[in-house]
Length: 312
Ligand SMILES: Nc1ncnc2c1ncn2[C@@H]1O[C@H](COP(=O)(O)OP(=O)(O)OP(=O)(O)O)[C@@H](O)[C@H]1O
Image 1 (spheres, helix red, strand yellow):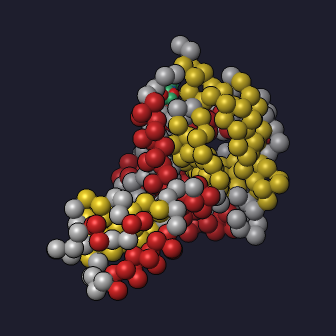
Image 2 (spheres, helix red, strand yellow):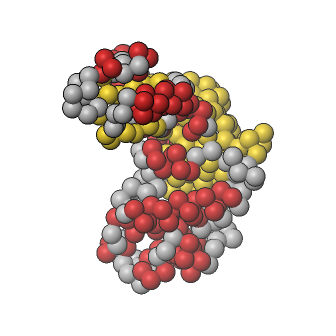
Image 3 (tube, helix red, strand yellow):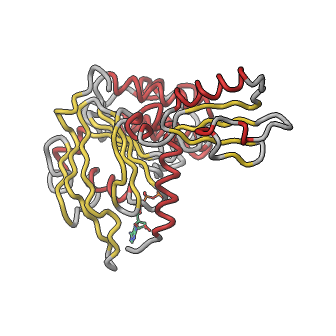
């Protein structure tokens, strides 16, 4: 949580949100969360979990079929005129005319945005200054994503919706975008991020929620979400050393010489392992000890979902 974030001053609130498509399929099934001012909240989930269906309601593009939604204290659908000028939306597909140049595109959008940033400033923020005269259709996929972001930032939004903002960006472009998003958040912008890159959520999010089949399965800070999962210790025993020689508490998880221990007592078990290795004069190869990652938590949820199958 950053010094500028205020979880007690929610800018986005959803309460038991439901969205049902024609045909009766419920894509969002009672989703509740809030995003504080200056907070970065990541909405994660398996494919088809209902993230886009949720975010479209928050952006005022669709009407909820049940539950309540407030953005900056307003109903984003019925009070769109009050909400729209104060939010920035970066959709998965920008959909702007590809014959215009980058600068012309920004100027065109600025014409419809009150208090818009100057074109140079908007392009500078996303590292596209040198591409201002290039036609949009000639941009790479990553450059288009940056242009999408520049357009979302044009009106200096209080709330920024970022849908897969770094898809198609190379590693450097991704880091640059992360830095920019962090800087915006530190200035007090509230951000709702959807992403399939778990390391992106881990790097940026103050809090996050993981959705599966229309519901939030787990939520909290990245640390809270991962602390609930066991840590892992992996190593390979030398030839001739059987797992039976390991201390009793560390024997589970051995497959031949390769050992993988899942533990909620990482420090104690690692300490015991290293003491045993030293006393027994055993060299452990490929030793790796780590707390659970967000990816572990996510894969657990996806695996559980596959077991229960889609019953909606
Ligand atoms: N217009 C529609 N009519 C009927 N079903 C829809 C419609 N749009 C989406 N769905 C379904 O609703 C579910 C949720 O879709 P949604 O796009 O919200 O998921 P998502 O979490 O954003 O997925 P992804 O990560 O794959 O983009 C999916 O099963 C999808 O097929």
